[in-house]
Image 1 (cartoon, rainbow, N blue to C red):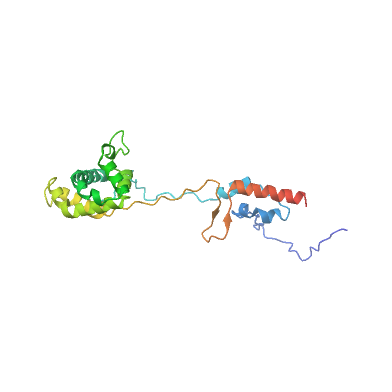
Image 2 (image 1 turned 60 degrees about the vertical axis):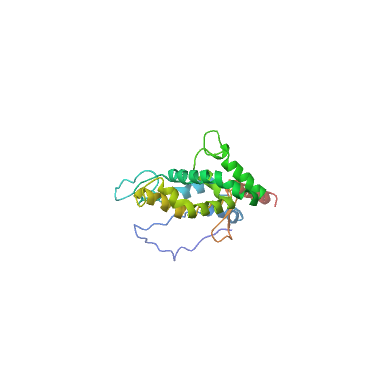
Length: 237
């Protein structure tokens, strides 16, 4: 059977600058390969994925030509003393630890066994940040350990409310910039310190969902497994 299409209605004189747009795959076609395979097309997944990446727009340049400052932005840009957080933590936590060495016998009988174990470690030689100890500095890990115990938070807040200003007066002149920086940090940040919850880690081969949560997005290994299964089903159908 010969097929002779009627070309009489097809325009004979096309403009010189006319062109037929080339067909291009959508960037997310590799996510929809089962639909393509069902009509007998086996896409080259690597090639399509590379083409999609090549279409990404380049990063925009900074037109202002202003050099950005290196390093992290200061947490307290208006701090007149520019004291490091760890220096302030070290001062306040060491002062409180010295106080608790004398205060602990007064509260020992009212504590649970778990609280006693914590305080004995905290007040012992290994509870002080130092080389060879559990904590090397007065940083985040040390503070997380302390403020994860409710009894510590209770005693620390009570001590600061009753003795905080008097203790700071021994270090610096009342009303000075140094006094204000240390007291402001302790009353606002250290006194309200909270331990951040650890986020669950994501496995490298784990599938994800889009923002709507209804369309699964597969990783390359899962995609190839489904592709091979589709080919096997077509061969054996």
